[in-house]
Length: 183
Image (cartoon, rainbow, N blue to C red; front, side, top):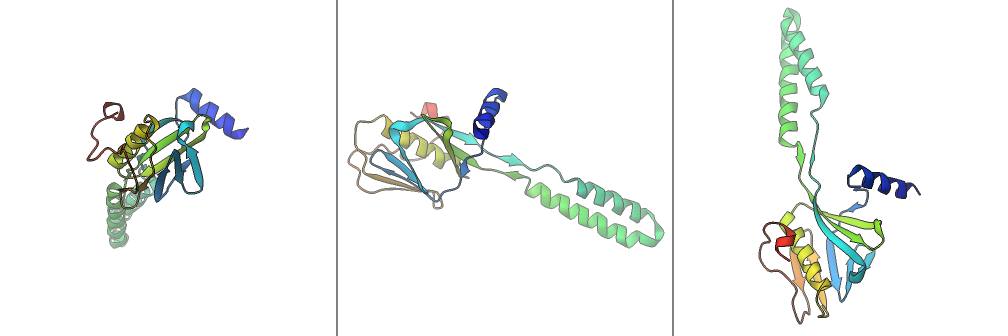
């Protein structure tokens, strides 16, 4: 019940509920099934695929500002000038570190089933083009009459392995632009 209320609230507020974000090392297409981890989906039960931006930006930590202000105060006092310089240097170093690591760039492939948001999952990767390539390949298999034998998507190596395919639904090369333009 709580999941339904959360999903309804997310829908009404126009946001996305990223509660089912998963990391996986391998995604497999076997026949008409999609397999990752301990989950198996039939391709006909997938309602939609969406490549989403899950990039997060860290807020500036206020303790760095506080540390800098204390350092500035101690720097202005004759007896604690060296301690103030040390605290100012430390706050400068921490601010520099925050600046270099403030964004966590990652993307996701949302697989939404016919059951709606309760049956959906988002697979995470840092490579946007790789996720687009996976989405187009799955779309091509969903819309083809050919029976695919085996395709494995390796997320760690960003590699696609085709084992025994008679008619390939794979998009080779880089995928540029939106998915809708490549389908």
